[in-house]
Image (cartoon, rainbow, N blue to C red):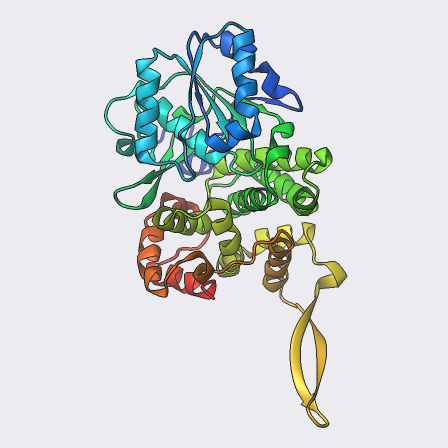
Length: 414
């Protein structure tokens, strides 16, 4: 690369690009899908969704909107959690066989990532696994309209698509502006049909997106602003959305948090939490948000020395109640075996931050450890090896060897 006199190397290193789709946000956004599909030139639409979203009633509503605008469509609803490579290829076959020219994704991260993969294959030859990595997609696919029905994956605004390689039992990352949707119709009402468990998992996923984007080595003032906003909204609203699923105030705030977190991580990338979660999800088919939730605390503790200033900034915004006091059961015998309990103050900021995250995780019912999820202690070395090769690790604030990653897995095993 030649650097001319007007552009210094330091300037090039500090440059950041910031990509987002067109976004329509608010209650009723879903109802605009027919109008926007027509505006984008769609003449035969492929709807990509899953059985759960159909059962919730959102698929039929989108189909009705398209029919009302006299737009023919075909629906591919065979997407499963952690979308598989063969599902992408099956969806692409439906797209081609029916002469489609626009894709609507309706659902959570799985449906949206599958739709991204179908779009890639609609515009390019070969197999979806050929496009693993960063900026590996040579040609754009058809227009994409995304309608999220969960508040967490943020696939509706990101340049990431995560697909499971079923032969290697490994999740691959496809990162490209070619998979950023043309339009995101973000309607908080669609999240009211989520179960409390899904609300918790997707909300913690969004929190991980924001935390990792904020300390990423590729962060910028724009991504920092979005990440901080997301973190405040999640800390203040996730427990409410979990306990009161019909409360539109909580639902709206969580949908906005997911949107902000997505804008942050799509442009700043992620880190060690997601590298380790991808390894777990690919090997065992585990829920992505749940994996992130149980990993976040120990990764924050590991990363803290390398990003102390930024983590301290987050701590100032999400302080522990009671001035950082944690009830800690330290017991000792006095006079005939009676036991006393004392409270210890969490003096170091890293412990305070970790405890605040742990408190939220417990409040929304995520208490599992790796051994509860069917992971064997003998699997940890292999999982760590996969995580060490994940592209998300490139922007983690602290380097992590396979051995160090294995030790983090071990800390959350029991």
